[in-house]
Length: 207
Image (cartoon, rainbow, N blue to C red; front, side):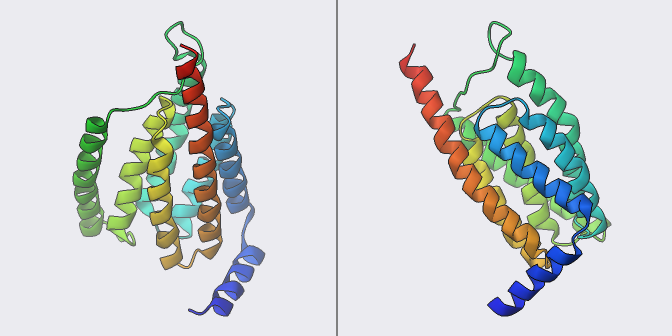
């Protein structure tokens, strides 16, 4: 598909986009902006966005694994809100931390193995589309979400990879409006990483 055709497709999708998608998109952007600023309110908007995104992923794009992931996000966001407010050592706000390299090696290997298992299951037993890429984004999104909950700096780097795969995943399904959204996500992930790293270094130097 050439650039003109994609542009026409995007314009058509914008014109035909229902309010559930706009709520999902707006809530997701607010979630990321507030998360980059370490605001606990990000979890409220995450709950709103994911609830509507679950419906969109299931009903419009047949991405069943991603729909289940969004339901999981809704539930886990309450944990995230509590952790950010009271997860510190003194039952106060949780500070930004980092994981050692060996932890990332183990996380990535386990994530890839689980991707194969989940992808195989949905490939064999469901009519889901793009099962293995969908499984990859699902598994690593869960991993990255736990890293966000515990305020691990590297979560933003994981999201850069995940959102890139999502970009191609929704593009392959003709969801060009969501492709544009994930471009915004990529930019916000870079901003979030830089802000969190600056805050982490500031806290480290103040010790």
